[in-house]
Length: 165
Image (cartoon, rainbow, N blue to C red; front, side):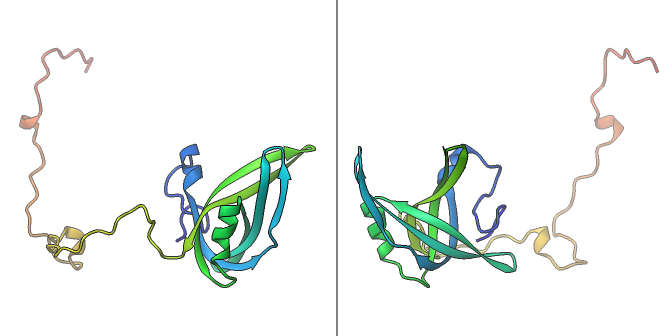
């Protein structure tokens, strides 16, 4: 689904709240090796992967990463060539006067799958919506009548007229 930013879901003006709601659908084209190590905070694991999505008429690739053993394991469910929907958060950091940006995936699901938090709507027969003027073919008038335009007698009277003319 392509909206304001090519391949990104951004329906309105961008805000900090939207940072957690960025999504993209595309095809996994490459998965890099898992990197792991230990730091003052404990053990860590990271894996980067490349996704191709359609940007207008041309395919575009973008690199994402997942952090943590649980997220790395989630990524292992998908293979190169799988169509996925990625929810992500961009972040930048400075190192030696240069800035580096990461696109950290926090959820990966098969493309076209509805979010698990939303329960499916129960199937109920829906009444046909009433036709609107936009549904009518060109040249056909709507079935309703328009109210007449207000006349001068419908306007409120002005008691204190201080206009110079």
